[in-house]
Amino acid sequence: MAVRTSQCFLLAAALLLGLNYAEGSGGGIAMRSGAKGLRMANCRIINNQSHSDDPDGAGAYFENAGDVTLTNCVFADNSGLRNGGAVYVGSGTAAKFVNCVIARNETEFDGAGIYNIGDLVLVNCTLAGNSTKDSDDRDGGALYQHENGTASITNCIFWGNMQGKAAGGATQLEPNDIHVQGGATVGIAYSCLKGTGSPNLTGSVTLGDGMITDDPLFADEYDDLHLKSRFGRWDALAQAWKTDAVSSLCIDAGDPSDIRFAGEPQKNGFRINIGAYGGTPFASRSYTKGWLMIVW
Image (tube, rainbow, N blue to C red):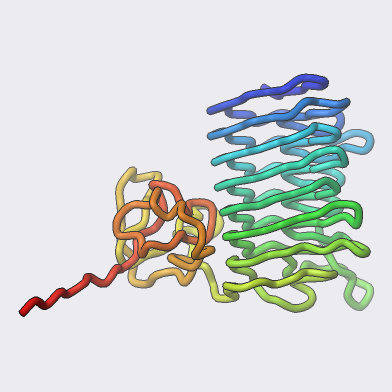
């Protein structure tokens, strides 16, 4: 099933949009022509393709779509011929992604995870294992920021994303999380990146507080993106809590002013985790020291 709308406001919850093949943009969902906005939660947009002429956004395509908010959604294994392997955010669109997973998507052109021309906000999202094809000048392994858009990123993980590059007459893939075109600027804070220099970040990227470049230690790269923890992580397949020999540095490393840590299971360190499960009941646990009160 695929969703296509224009000139309306759409509410969607708990949908599976998968295995669609579009002869244009938006294999899973497409909103355009002055759409009034979207609220989508707990949805999975997986294994969609967009082909034919000028097909952008294999998973989702938003052009003049208004105010778009996606919460706890998964975009995985989508494949496109042009821009935006998972998501294309076009002009006239203000898109906010909260607690979303964008993983293992690919595209022939730019922005294997997200291609953004609009106004983009990412909060507690994980973008991992996305890749442009191994051809020359294909930019934005996770995010391609067009010069006419804006992007603000907090509490997110970017890891294992790749882009194409020409090298000595041949082509190869190189690590890249964010590519910024022209005079645009991307602001990112309290997040985990593969690296803070070129080629991982290209263009104007403003790094704020709380940046991490260590391996986030996914439970199963890039299939289970819960963070490893010595004190407990959720195993969705087993539907049980498990412990690991190591703990991710992304645990208790999010924005200290973000009070959504209260939605995480005890013990939560009184600070939100970085990544898609931060602030949710499925956040990996941490060690919290107790208090000792002596009265005499």
